[in-house]
Amino acid sequence: MNSLLLNLIDPSPSLRRLSWLVFVLMTCALLYLGSRAGAATVIPPPPVDKLLHMVVFGTLAAIVWVACGSRSVLAPLMIVTAVGLADEGLQALSPERVASLTDLVADVVGALTALLMMTALRRVVSRFAAARTGRLE
Image (cartoon, rainbow, N blue to C red; front, side):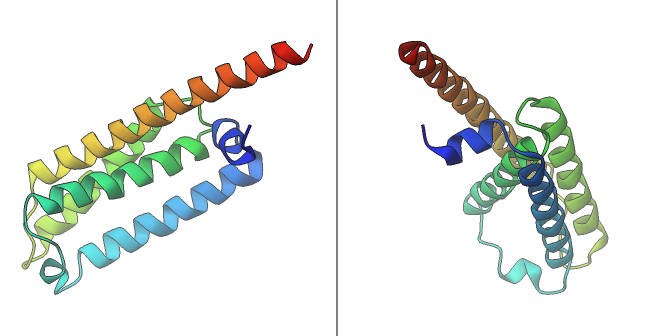
């Protein structure tokens, strides 16, 4: 079994800490750059922007899932949704940006999709590892 997959479904404490660090850095960059003047000029038009929201927030959710020990779906979903709310809140305060419920929905859909994929990956890898261990005994 690929050690990368095993590390994702059963992360070590150091990988969990690294995941939290990556999440915090990505979130700070997202919130800072997204609220800067001129940010709207580099964001693609709909519907591509919604796909970008889904990819970014799906990535954040997968990172938080690993940081939380690859067990919970609810905690990463709530954390990433809070980041999405903060992002839209900052956009509402920026004169050049517009807060959007559809952006928040795309954030949540992307996060939920990634979390469901990570959970499915965990099940498949766990079953494969159990079957492989059973064959070796």
